[in-house]
Image 1 (cartoon, rainbow, N blue to C red):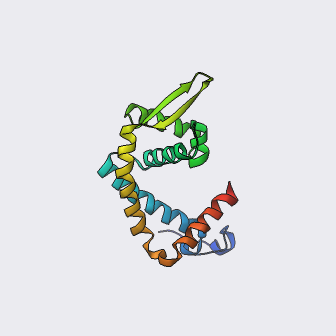
Image 2: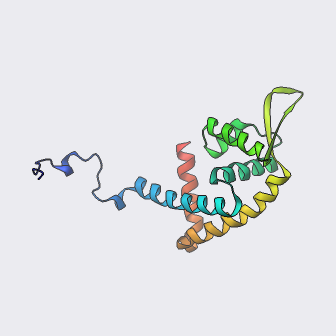
Image 3: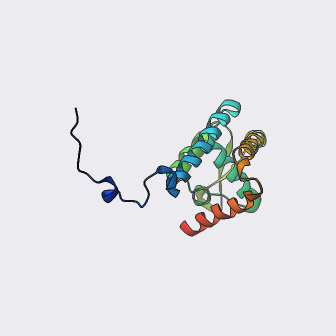
Length: 160
């Protein structure tokens, strides 16, 4: 049997809250984790890609439309995925013919990235899946969806 302690949890706990649902960070973690899990399961099941694959593929395509040359560093900065993770994902995705890496004579040191034809076909299908999941997951925001997006963008910009 355990002895009762005289430890005063409220005095020593490093935060100003006592319930998990009053911590902004913990609520953000739970919501984002639930969203990621749903994305992971569905993308794997229907498209045989990870959520990170989708992020890299869709970001590469977006950057292709808005920039001429995309490097792994640009992708890392854009997605906030660590450079090592981006490099590993790109290698795997190149082996599966989802992206193509290439060099340019005038810039022989840099390796550039673009979405392959196979990657584009997969991206078209997976984007519909992700959009459907997002619509369902964020439905609770209703008419405040744009406010939520602006708030999330503000958090990202403030912490970059």
